[in-house]
Amino acid sequence: MSEDQDFTHFISRIKRKTGIDLSQYKEGQMKRRLTTLRMKHGFGSFAEYDEAMEHNRALLNEFLDRMTINVSEFWRNPARWEVLRDRFLPLMLENRTSRLRLWSAACSTGEEPYTLTMILNELGVMERCSVLATDLDSTVLHKAKEGVYLERSLRDVPSNCKSKYFQSSEGAYVISDILKRGIRFEQQNLLHDPFESGFDLIVCRNVMIYFTDEAKHLLYHKFAAALKSGGILFVGSTEQIFSPGQYGLETADTFFYRKM
Image (cartoon, rainbow, N blue to C red; front, top):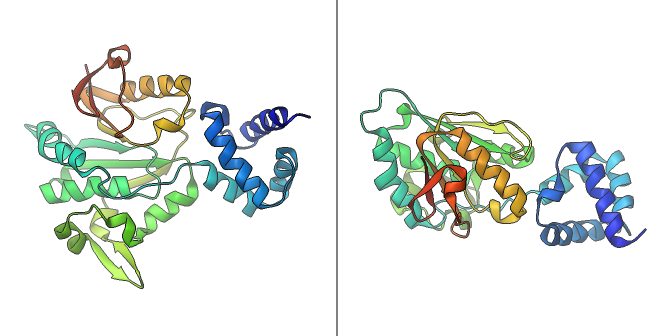
């Protein structure tokens, strides 16, 4: 069997086993990532690696953790979060009687949804908002719920927020229970699971760059359908949407798109 066939068969087996479709990720990036992991354990082929995962749950969990993209930090690209805080959230809350519905999609270890609840609490509107945070990987969701972070993740957190919402403990920082209580964490496969609807804001940043164009197209349609009219999709700094109108979206600001 050729190397390409070995990887193609592996993708099919993983989809049957876990429901995760690796073909929706950019092949070069994913193949390099998983080849490194396979070789680390001394497997000569993906077929051997897959057979080993059938009998070793720890190996499977490590594979799932490596497959997902878990690079995150608080207040990543601070100027964009400031636009959300100073412009879009006040507009959403103006003359609002029902709770604001916010979703952090592919939330990884929680830095993004915690940044969001930090802003909401600083604005004094946490009780008026409902925040959902989802990710494919149960391991990172567990870490998000624990809320323990290394200092490098906090480098862009404003100093007043760092002292207010983090407690130093044994070389790490523990997030405040006030922020934890404001978030509902759930496991979700973005490509295959149905979405809730009626969101005022969806935050999905620095994740789409790993997907194929076909997968991106599917997800932008799903995100747009999940937003209420006038709702905002907030994406990462390398994820500008070209021709947002094809998804029923319009540019509201740099990396912010409004549902028409």
